[in-house]
Length: 338
View 1 (cartoon, rainbow, N blue to C red):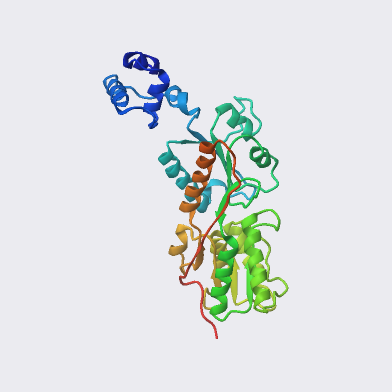
View 2: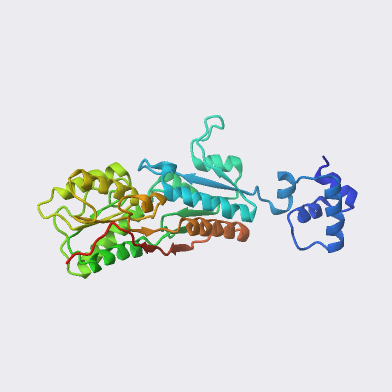
């Protein structure tokens, strides 16, 4: 197969002009564009990375870092949806995704070293610890960056409006007549922004409506895991003044919480109402079907890639922070009480 330089020689133009045609740049005359395209077709030319980067100075690759210390990894259905949306939107811009790796063969000890070796055009960081040294290193690097599920002012970020969603959940329970409302957080306070925002909304709602947060009503955090939700709900059921409703900071924990209620010989929602957060696919198939707050994983992934490409094209880092609206999904796990 001919190289870009051989195509340029046959067309009587520079390799730069051929690269512009390959990358659909507008500043080439139609006559020259048609001539080059005909030669490309005749030669069955397939553009390699050299041709694609000659003009754009891009590798057309976006680095993805997904890491956290809560133990759910890529198995979490919400983040799986975000990454799928990443892929779709990156495809539209012509980018490929490359997951970060601490690669012994390459001798890199950090994600940033790996991405420097691969020369990516930008980095998307998912579910980062606000205080993580590697995350800070990437944000402070020259690479365009965007952080998902954090609201960090020093870089571009995209995340759900967790405070708004938690307020929706609490309002729904209150309108059903519940005043004894407990909460199962997702993580220890100060370590996870979504969990902190949801807990903050819980406390503010209880204060605003003069509802007492009784001792034990903020349960031990459940690590966003089914088992964590189960154990936290067990503790709530042992309280002297048992709550009539529980706002759980994730659907996976809500699944465990419902199991704990059932194992205690009680029923959801007859004895206790449960509302979750995320609207994972399984939520609609549970018994009872789970009332929850829906995060828009598709829009989060799309906006994150948009922000990353915007920085790459502008050749400058930006500090846009986008909060994506959420939605209350009413199903069968909450009941009106008198």
